[in-house]
Amino acid sequence: MVTPESRGTIVTPAGEVGSTRIEPKGAVATLVVAHGAGAGMDHPFLAGFCRAMGEAGVATLRFNFLYVERGRRSPDPERVLRETWLAAFEDATGRAGKRPVFAGGKSLGGRIASMCVADGMPAAGLVFLGYPLHPPGKPDRLRAEHLARITVPMLFLQGTRDPFARPDLLAGVLKTLGDRATLVPIEGGDHSFRVRGEKADDRTIGAALAAEAAPFVRRVAQGR
Image (cartoon, rainbow, N blue to C red):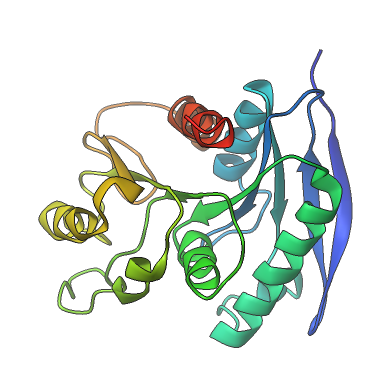
């Protein structure tokens, strides 16, 4: 039986944003997932990922940042992005009961989640769907200093051709994080996890990543 999606809203200090929940019966954990800079929560990639996570027994909550909700293209200031993330996490925690709550997301969404966790948001773990380690072509501008303050397990799903994360630089950062960080390289994948020569739509690509993310969430949730 397919668990239906449930639409809702989340109240943030700057206004309401839309949300979508998938809560399968007997879920072992909840994963709150934020979208990337260029697409909202209903992008097929994120929808496919969350649907597959639900089928694997992990509840999900995905949400829009305020700028997407209001039809703008440019991301909100960092303060607003963080406030929205914290409100979404609080909403998920209030519904999760005794289930552990994880955080993560695509690119920008995952990075903001990590900043919130570094500053105290009590996620059980982090799942990055393409961490934006640096701007394309600017490997000297690393966005990694705060990761050292994170004490919970982190999963990095990363394309090996991702222009936002040069593999050698990412490996160096993860080495400093020790066993808190797990890297799953997607061979040939770009920032959207598309692989040259392979014809797969975004929904299928997102769903495939759940095959790596769900076991990680289950393992951490069960304390193994």
